[in-house]
Structures are given as structure tokens and as C-alpha cells.
Image (cartoon, rainbow, N blue to C red; front, top):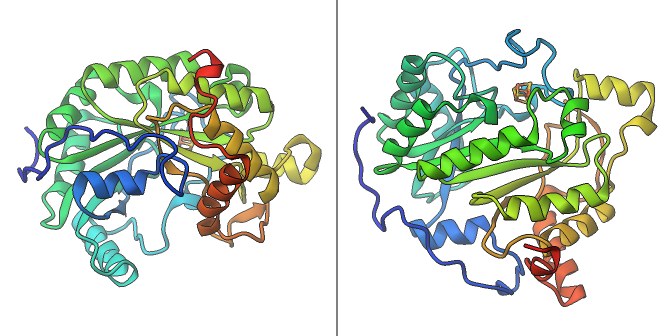
Length: 332
Ligand code: SF4
């Protein structure tokens, strides 16, 4: 059975998007959507439930994806030795200082593969988070090959009374690239997971890395069209960053030419091209990411992450363009 019940005001139905050109932003921004839907900010509190990943525990492989070091997306405030309730309390103390006045929080199961493992244990972890009095829902990061229908049906049941964001790592739509980064699944697997999640009525955020080795510019832009045609609610886009301790970072140190990296100017131009090809209904939850400085090998940008959004809007304005401007030209 689902965890404790707190029905959400405003229902769970999607609100209509404002339509292009989306005001000054010129793209369909997740934060604006969340404010429309929930009446204010919803902040994620990271938790680590001690799950692993089939690409690390030997089921699929041991080395993991060549870009992955889970320390790169674990916030400094998180202590994995604590129980889930304690982790949430610690995270809330940090977030209350950083974002005073935030009304709602959801527990973010981010590191490793958070739908991989014994079903009873998954449920116990999710329900421990939902039992916290200040937690209104869950964001669950996972791989497309770790989503059995049993788990999807359970999350769908939870979503009737809680915010449930399912984040699926697609990473690339190109099978050759997925093989090269040792991902352990192909794009067809992602399509299957997205379609099954939709059958269960779940809203999915897809995670995509722009610039993986072997990825072409045409392939990345085509990904905008391909994902627009699938049941994806929102996208998290990430520029490729090299994290210390990863196989990809070692490849780059041996031969920098083998792993081309975007500078900030080129990334903004790529983002604008990508967003122009994206369906206007697709929400953009993230435009890039920032690995902790101590872990990041490259690239080093002068631009802060918070500047990405206004720089993208400025580039779209310079072109007289907006999200979806060329969506239908792409055969969507
Ligand atoms: S990126 Fe995800 S799937 Fe790949 S090795 Fe890391 S935790 Fe596992």
C-alpha cells in the first residue's frame, strides 16, 4: 500500500502550457510550470537509500557508465550513514537556510538506480521518505531497464496522493554512443520504458547528456525531435563534464581529442538549436549541471550555471525565436 496520504490541492492533472513564445524566457520552463501547478516552489531534498546499479554490481557490468562517478551528484550535506528521516532533516536544515519560505519538498532518490532491487526494500525506502511530515512526494532517478511493471504500477498508485517524478536516464538516442559509454541499454529500451510509464499514467522527466563521445551535432538535434514524439513530460539537459575517477576522464587525460567538450558559447548555441526543435509542450527542467569543483576535471567555464537560462533566452531573442519554432519543420 502507498505511504501516508496527503491529497494535494489542485489535483494531479497537468496544466496547459502557456504556449509559445513563453514570455521573456522563450522556452517552456519547469519552474514556471511548478508554480502554476502547485502554487509555489517545490524543492528536492536528496536522500541516499543505499541502492546500487546493475552496471556496477556485476549484473550488467562492473565498471559503470564511463562518465559516472556518483559522488559528482551527491550534495555535500548528505551523509549516507544516516537513516532516510535523518537525511531529510539534515537536507531540510540546509534548504531552509538556502531557500527560505519554500512551501513544499519532495525526497530525491538520485544516486545510483533507485528502482533496482528487491521490491519490498524499494517500497520501504520510498515510504520512509513519504512518512516525513514535510515531504509531499518523491523524485526517483533510474535507468530505463530497471522499471518492471510492478514498480510502475506501485508508483502510479502513489501518484494519486503524492507528487511523483520519475526521472529516466536516456543519456543519448544513438545506440553507437550508448555502447561507447558502456551504458548497457539501447534507445529502444528507453522508448519501451517511457511508453510503459505512460500506460501507467506516470509523468516522466528524461535525462539527456549533450556531447557524449561519438555524438554528432545532427544526432543531438535529432534527439529533440525523437524525444518530442515520446511521452516525456520534461527534460533535464546536461553538458558533458568530466568527473575525476571516471573512465572518460582518464580517456581525456590520455587523449583530449577523443572527448571533445563544449565551451559556454558553443553550448548556448547548441541549446538554442535544440530547443527550437523541441515540442512546445515539453518542459525544460534543467539546461545544464555543475559538478562540485573538487571533482570536475573539465570543462571550466567562466559562466555560472545560473547564467545559462538568461543566456539561452537572450540567444533565442537575438534570433527572434522560441521553443518549438522549428518543431514541425522536423517532421514531428
Ligand atoms: S550513470 Fe547510473 S547507470 Fe550508469 S553507472 Fe552510474 S549509477 Fe549506474
